[in-house]
Length: 231
Image 1 (cartoon, rainbow, N blue to C red):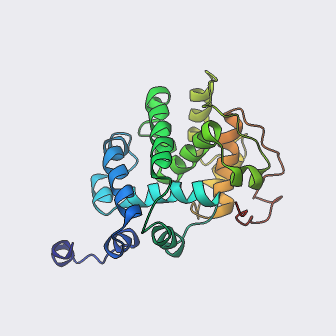
Image 2 (cartoon, one colour):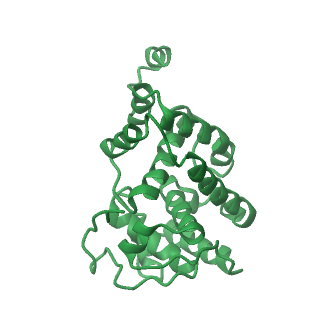
């Protein structure tokens, strides 16, 4: 780590600081999961090899775990550091978390490979896609309360899903804020790690997956910034 710093004069980013500060269960869980998913992240154009060297994969997966535990929230270096600290001694749900995340990536590989290299594979968009798929298949009581929705308890099976997700990605690419996916597009433009933007993306993703989401869930004007709901 210090040889790289000396060679390239790059200061440690926040993910690297967490990696160097914590030596416990959560760090190694994230490292092993990142190793397992590394080829997907590169092949699908989510992250470059350079970004993975700088631990952007660890940050992406940590944000997914944070959503499992706290619902749709803004992230910051402090919130992710607290996540590492909370599970430094022991990660009770390591097996469950691993199965949930791997099953979502396997679903994408089997059913949504056409999204490879597109706008749905932007890291913030993929994070929302994984959370949406996980909610459909496994549920999340906090997200259910935040968005007033129920999980169907299974992965989406609609044959139209690939086309619907392509439409979201195309709207994102074209920055189409006047079309039917204005909410998703708004969620992808600026401040993508903030709670209102994440709610917007997740709401539209869940709608195309067949989950009933109230139209009142509209961070553009109808809904104030939501706070995490205690479990």
